[in-house]
Every structure is written in structure tokens, then in C-alpha cells.
Picture 1 (cartoon, rainbow, N blue to C red):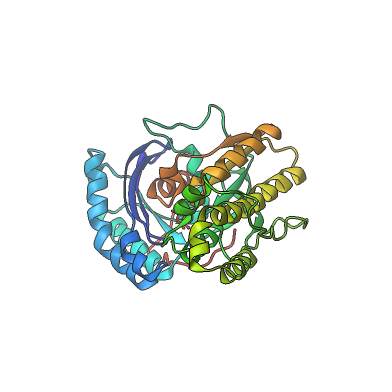
Picture 2 (cartoon, rainbow, N blue to C red):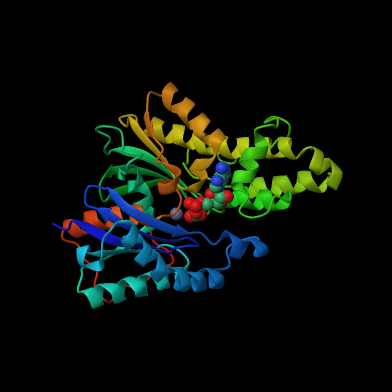
Length: 342
Ligand code: KG4
Ligand code: ZN
């Protein structure tokens, strides 16, 4: 059995390296976001993201080992996010992982980034452990700047997508709105903060698909509705009503997310556990609404700490070591994939 792996995550704009044990214990994780580099462009610029990964990745790997008091000799395998994501960003991680695996003669495993998000609740460290006995089957809502999916996790490796966004991701919906009201990028957290002092009912935003039996999401109409409302307001008016705008817009997203989670539970009524994961799970109103929903529906809800919800290599390491210890392995033909099903 492999004791620990070095894991690499570079699927979008976070460079992250972790050392993770087979039981999910995170020995170290070193991450560098690139918000400062992408901010002037109001979004992630793929070319800039991959260039920064090449600069940051090896120093992050060295630091991750140092923080864990280990050397490459203590590592039993290399795990790397190979799909889905920005192709240039993934490429940097995959090439680095393949080089390390070949140079150190270690087994290599390519990891699906979404599977990694789904397994984040099982990570553990000095401050966090999953609730006693928490295990599949569970429903999971994976929401970030790049993805928005509802899954049924039946067992390790057995995942069904119950619903997904047909256009923008939830985080993207937050970010685009934040940009429209002049809050900068990435703006989700700023919308969250401002919304606390606003009126959720001040503006009528649509709740796309909420009356539909499909478990999919659509957020692009929400963005258009916001644009129409803003076009009718003067800059001074927008400024004065920013908190109300944020609260109303956020509430529409939260209603859609929690509403679909609820529908997913109704069609899988033998399920008693749920997970909220991805960067958008930092949203305070969403947490509050999901917790209230879980209490009402008697669901055991796990929201991993934010450090394991946002893109990080620890979750990649855990997914990777589980697969390696089941006898799976990638070889030197491992190639990044921008898209991947499930
Ligand atoms: O998982 P993540 O760090 O990176 C990926 O996109 O994969 O998620 C980042 C996203 C951004 O869209 C950001 O605006 C959003 O999560 N976000 C939030 C909050 N904090 C981060 N959205 C709403 N409320 C927040 N508090
Ligand atoms: Zn992600």
C-alpha cells in the first residue's frame, strides 16, 4: 500500500501542491492564487494562468515537502489533476507530474478534478475531520467559478450527475454581476458581504428552471435581468442601492441552488447525507439556507472547510491515492483533457 502521495492541482488559476496520506490526512498543502495577476482583466486569462503555474509549481512542491518535514524519498506516488480544466494550465501540472514520476520512479495517477471536489469531505487535519461514520451514498452540490453540478455519490468511483448548469457556473454568475456593479474580480465574496445589509426582495430576479422537473441550472438569464435593471438606473442610484441589488441577486442564486438540491433529494428519498463543496460554498447566505434546508429535511450536511472547498491539491491527493491503492495507474501517455464527462 502506498503511504503518501505528492499531489498537484493546476486546473484553473490556483497553483497547489499537497502531501496527503492514504487515510486522508493532509501533511501539508501549499497554494498560490493568481487573483492579482488576473484582476486587471476582470477574469482568468488562460495564457497568464499557465505561465504563472510554470513559475510557481516547483517552488510550491519544494515548500510542501519542507512543511511536511519530508523529502521526495518519502513519497510513494504522484497524483495530478488531468481533467477537466483550462488545457494550458492542466498541461503544466501533467507535464511536471510525469517528469517527477519518471525521475523518481514513482507511480503516477491522473485525477478528475470533480471527483477530487466530491471527496474533499474525507480530508483531515489538526482542525478538521469528517463527521464520525460519514460515507456514501450522499448528494453533492459542487459549485465554483468553473462548475456547477449536483451529483449522487453512490460509492467511491460511482458518481452520477443528476443536474448541471446549461450555461454559466454559479461562481461565474456572482463574478459577472460583481463586475457589472463595479465590485471587481473575483467578486463573489464582495457580493456576499454587501448583501448582508441589503433587502433580498428589493429587486425581482428570475429563478430559472425552479419549476422544472429537470435538475439543471441556468444562470445566464439572471445576468441579463441584472443588466436590464442596471441600465435603468443612474450611477448614483446603483451606488445607493448596491446592497439591495447584491442581496436580491444572491437570493435568486441561492434559491436555485437550494431548490434543486431539494428536488434532487425528493427523487432520491433514500439518501440522508449531503455535501456542499467548491469555492461558492463560502457564501454565507448559501450556507445558512442549505443548513436550514438540511435541518428541515433531516439530512446530514457536510461542508468541508473552505481550504478544501476551493481548488486545492489535498483533495486531488486523496482521490489519487485511493485510486493508486486500488491498483489503478496512469502512464507517461497521460494527457490533459479540457472536458470530461461526469
Ligand atoms: O473553487 P474556486 O476557488 O475556484 C474555481 O472557480 O474553481 O471558486 C471561486 C469562485 C469565484 O467565482 C468566486 O467569486 C466564488 O467562488 N466565491 C464566492 C464567495 N467566495 C468565493 N461566491 C459567492 N460568495 C462567496 N462568499
Ligand atoms: Zn474546482
